[in-house]
Image (cartoon, rainbow, N blue to C red; front, side, top):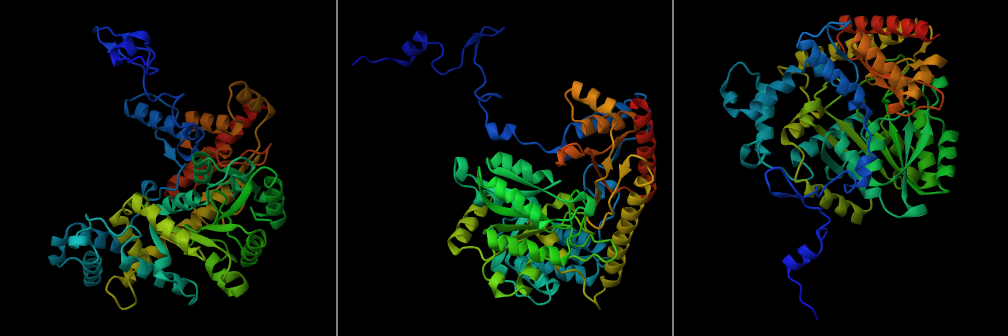
Length: 510
């Protein structure tokens, strides 16, 4: 046999490593990149996340241009693209920040300006941390005492339905838990590949995660004409069609809804549970907006509570994962990345695999775990911080309710804009009429018509919204999503600018 040296191989074939060596300016050999757009993971290229897409990137550029003194038809960019409450001016809950400050710098435990209940809570959290420090790793599933507090919270919320702390997994925001569960559900190739049912319009986390995991996205459409309600016949249609080309295994529900702001009725939740049981689907309930319910006659019902009240025929069999977060509701603490998921009726062997999977990322951020503990175990009646906590919590939710109503009312005064009631969550998703000429110009530029509309609004008014095409919508309809989070005075300015822009846009292209 012939022996070849590495140098001989290289001299015989410059492409031995598919690198195409070239001489650089300094006389050294350079090689093509190992990782290129053609050799990278193809599923990553399919990922899209409209909430931080091209519109937002342009908004950042405009902010920089304004700061450099460049003249624009507006004096500031108003971002209404993302549910980032504190960035929009919402104030944090004092008690939460006091306890987190104490946990971060325990020397403050000797400071008399901090209330005793905040100190005792911080002391308990620190005792649960390795070395009494929030800088240590925790157990991969989360700090034991925090998981116990989450379980007690769920029991109180759900009227006494029991909750096992071992079914609680603390997560890096709700998103982490959702993606983890989707990973567990993925299997099969071709027509056997996992399909996951998601609502349209949807929160882009779902479509992005499914694209990255190589799963099949199964769209079911919410009924815009009936306040974005969920219709079981539409679920059945989507499922039956999907079974022709994939293996549907999971059904995702967002309640209250993002981006659509609807609150599901108890009757609807019962119907969904029966559907999941009949069709053998794993239920995923995204309930991060559970405190954000504003409309009269609407009430949040957790999927777990309804499931158990339907009796053992369902409560012993339907597999459910539900998710909550510190990022929304009255807290708005997005940056701490705190959250949890609860799993119901999961196979024991799969649960062991889930525990193994979360151990790979070591643990969720411990400050986020501490904050989650405070959310589920806030000041109690008789404690020094209770009155102020209730005052701040009530004020935050009341203002959000007022802004939800204001948004709906103002948008519905504009001809060509139709906005359903914002029953809950933090967003409105109004339908917009775009003139035919504008649609044609957008398509000529290779843009979705609502992207064209929103980008034009940004350039002319400084208002940053997200086009409905980033969330999904029925063909031939156009929408945008905007948060209701800006301060009331700024929200009023924003709404007036949207109104003026839409009227001007319609006239320009009519």
